[in-house]
Image (tube, rainbow, N blue to C red):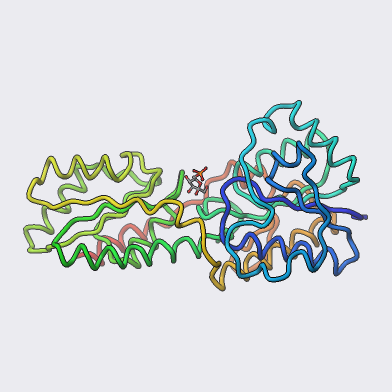
Length: 324
Ligand code: F6P
């Protein structure tokens, strides 16, 4: 029987985390479970920054970006001593279940913690990167893509006016999930992602071909985690090879992490929040709640962490066809 649970957000924040926190709190209240919020992820857990939440604590939050519980990355939690301190704090508050909202790093910590101290934990996929196995989409991904796309549309206007080639870097530490829809939706000529090998030489060839065919402006989307390095490096090499090309670089950066969540992210955050609490109540632990093919699934943490969610390679072909 779950009597008291706690929820926290950890790692990079993402739009829709508040919708998820709200759903966790309200589902707990609905089922008569006491619910606490841990501030600043594992960092706050170690320090005992644990506050009681009720239905009113999450009023007027579903539409807000960021995370009301704040977030942090903690090195101390990666040590046994850190985790022991965190466990002592949770024991003092008599917490008997956790909902961890975050990405890969968050679940790696949660898996270790549960193995060592046995507090059942259910994860909610909260990251803009969409790089977690066990869910088609992560909370915040849809908003981040739309934010990036809005910026790319604006850059396209100026690129076109000045006959320029823009190298636009989007987020995605180890994945091209943000880059792909930005390239297709933003009408890019080229997309560079960590999951596929594309040399700078191939980029130069494609741009040269376009240039010869009288294309005057170009958009190249580079995922920050691409193996050929970042947009700045690629742009410099291209400029050296095609000096007549007027190149510019834009790094969209953390603007992708903020803002009011889209309807899709509010819905996903809410669905997952309910599923996380009800999963705990039904004895689930060491798993992440996700939506695959529109169905709720619980995937063991070790699979979400170590299995790679593959990118559909046909998307690369789409970019090629559509930029002809
Ligand atoms: O994991 C989400 C993410 O935004 C990545 O896309 C990016 O590489 C990273 O976090 C940036 O982290 P920080 O906010 O710590 O600079």
